[in-house]
Amino acid sequence: MKKRYWSSYEQAKLLRLRDAQKLAWPAIVEAMPGRTEGACKVQYYAILRDQAQARRYRPTRLAVSRPRPAPVIVTAPPVAPATTIAPAPRGASLSALREAAELRLRIAERGLTGGWFNDPPPGRSALDARRRAAAEATQGRSAGEVSDAG
Image (cartoon, rainbow, N blue to C red):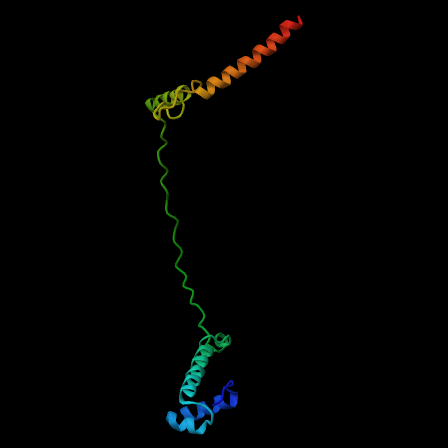
């Protein structure tokens, strides 16, 4: 038994015996000394698979393909521009202006959420109280330093 790679000569002979001469596998094995029937079958189908892949993924395939026809450009007849109707000018009603002003005032007084999410009004949170106390303490120290100097 041969335990080496198939040469290109052996591969060509295998293809010729199977495809051109239409021999059965036992006859092919007799013509290929040192190769078993299974090895011949595996090699034959591997060759066919490789050839199919080469045909499928050949880079020159695009160059060989027939040229595409040029696209046909159809031009539509010119269409007159549609006349647009300008909407009538809408002035804001007095009640809408009043509601917008009230909303802005409410946001300024109570904050954006206006107490909906249990948040205190601006300036009344614990963080604001700490900031205020720190600011008063720093002002008191600076005022005390001035009074000690005088």
